[in-house]
Image (cartoon, rainbow, N blue to C red; front, side):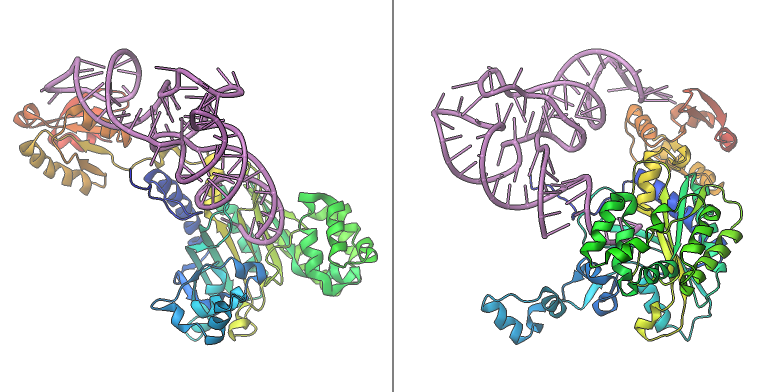
Amino acid sequence: MATKPSIPKGTRDFSPEEMLRRKYIFRTIEDVFQRYGYLPLETPAMENLNTLTGKYGEEGDRLIFKVLNSGDAWKEVSDDVKAQLKAGEEVHPGKLAAQLSDKALRYDLTVPFARYVVQHQNEITFPFKRYQIQPVWRADRPQKGRYREFYQCDADVIGSTSLLSEIELVQLFDDVFTALGLQVAVKINDRKVLSGIAAISGQPEKVVDLVTAIDKLDKIGREKVEDEMRAKGITDEAIARIAPLFALSGTWTEQRPQLEQWLAASPIAQQGLKDLDTVFNAVGAMRNARLEFDPTLARGLDYYTGAIFEVKALEGTLGSSICGGGRYDDLTGIFGLKHMSGVGISFGADRIYDVLLETGKFPAALGGSTRVLFANFGEAEALHCLALLRQVRTAGLAAELYPDAAKMGKQFSYADAKGIPYVAIIGENELKQGIVTVKDMKSGEQKAVKQEDLLAALA
RNA sequence: GUGGGUGUAGCUCAGUUGGUCAGAGCGUCGGAUUGUGGUUCCGAAGGUCGUCGGUUCAAGCCCGAUCAUCCACCCCA
């Protein structure tokens, strides 16, 4: 045998069965997006490399898939780099990459969106609500729930600072997961609260180190979190000052007074708490989503400035998050458009797929759409079926004619494998009598009907 | 980038201390059943045991390297 064909690491083929389930997820999310007034947008798979670099932190830059320049990429490499390579000296990988590549695959949908907004600012009516469902690529090492090509389903509103957007997005989460029938926890935090905690600790400049350590609390425990803080140069005194964090428990209303007291000296934290109050008080009753305050939630520090969201499935064994999001006050600032606040969320369709599959939450009726298969008995009979096919299709039912005059057993197996509920049989006898034999594949029963009664028999 | 596990038929996997060890189930195809699938019975095709090298009289099994893949860390959807 020739060498087995394969696909790149971390990518996947999606079979028809899988696509039916994936499309169900996309359709569900898209319907809800549209119901909230978000409009579709697509951007290219490739962006200019300099649009993406520096937006996701050092780690993120490493994970961007760069596209080799077309033509003779090597020709563009500068002489000094060539000389260095020839001499066997090490060249900074970023420097070499920048000379070999000026395009890259998009890493997420938020940065391309920000680029779009800046580029088209004069054509856009603000506040601008858009959704975007497209694949993104990350040169990560694949593992459970992690792929190198995966789909994000983003909804963002930009050009408004109103907390009504945060409230709306929480409700949107609830709508989507209610439609999908999955129980989830929507975790919320506010970057301002985190800044306040850093201020209270006495080391406000350490906010990033502090927060990335806190973020691991539920995973590695308090002691290791404190170890990591010390390793990052956070003093024991500062660690002592954030001790109340570990004592927090219960619902938002239970935690609220403790937070109030602990963070009383930080105006910025107070603002964050007030904003969270607004959201908690306004979202109203939720169905499948449970809104929880999580002071350890830190994601996306590189650009989030206000609310931070993360959604975790309460069912299944996938521990990681299935959605993320937050408010960014100055995302477009990097591209030259200041004072444009936005807030957005992202659904991880691939992880949602994995959870729904594991928990058996996909609707059973997602199977193939063909309602009736016309068996093929030969040229004359098949041609006769064409008129009936048109009639059935015009009535809005999916129908197909087996393309070859194969043995009946093979044709029935085909219908069975595709989950087609009815087989219409028109052989020599039926043709003579002007009837059609309709077999119900599930019960095995079959009956002869007049051709004009075919539609009724397929109901 | 760091640390582990696994590579045997299309798929899921057995294979004992190296010595009939090239196997099973499922799937596919053919037949029983030339106008009837899903159930049943019979049969067939399909593998240089990931790759290269080493040890040995003898390697699917032991050793080394390499590639692939999965899991965990980092980070993230």
